Length: 245
Image (cartoon, one colour):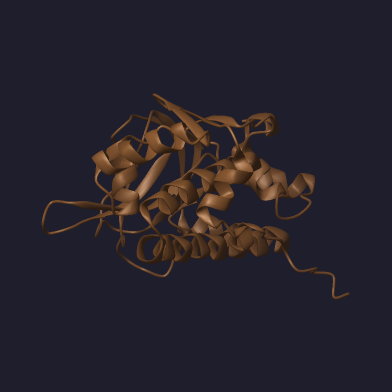
């Protein structure tokens, strides 16, 4: 897989400059791609946790199924994300992971990540930074669920996707693909699909955004961010200098 096609390399370059050796190590994590289909589970809660995977193409989400049959979506995973880092210290999966659309993933065992840590201090730091940001995203999701109105919840989630996609899409624009169904958006935000539909219609009437099938166009990104009371501190990540200066 060439650097041009590697979402994970573009993602990691967001944190620090990478050497050719660093890029080769990241490329080695994507040497065994496999195609996965929409609705396919990469793993389920309580499955053995002995591997990670990179999401090279497509979208996915992590989830927990509740006893009443409902589903809570925990994370929305985008191309370039490393899946499973949070379970590095666990023997079993804490949540399931499901593909939102067709895609490509590359599996690698825990021991391969340990080898990467041994070979590159920079990549070790970036993996810790990625894990920290995943935790920050979950924290923000908790605040979104507990303390924001329906309009704020949906505005916040869509604007967050817009900002995150700019990392791995070199030519990202205000119009981008958002392949989550209204039910999936509701499962991520604690809303019914009917409430999601009404809220999206309200955004259109207010000139904030247009949702057509799997595509969203932000008509006024600044106004949408204001609607969401969006404070992007949790997305402004960077590495502290590592040279000792």
